[in-house]
Image (cartoon, rainbow, N blue to C red; front, top):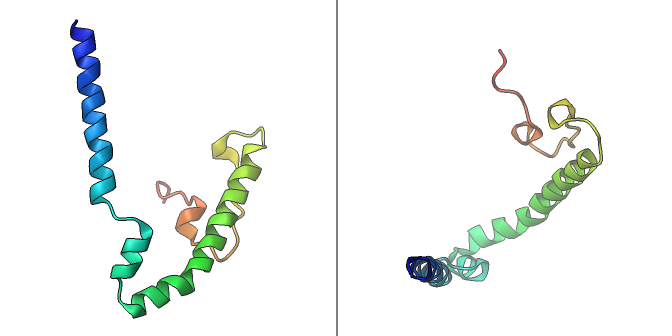
Length: 94
């Protein structure tokens, strides 16, 4: 009996979390509507640049996934448009 009660409790908590997420977190359209026209224009100008950076990173990840090397042996070869922090620089070495 306690297993069922626990299962219903977990399900209820998850259900409430999903409902809260959909009611509290705005979607992209609502966020864009609430922005000032200047911010919205800047967002639209940079949208394609961010998409190109994302595509370059994902292509590199897919290429590295095909390799038999471990992840720490793979050297990043990202285009210059991607910031160096996303290229996996080692911060632990001095």
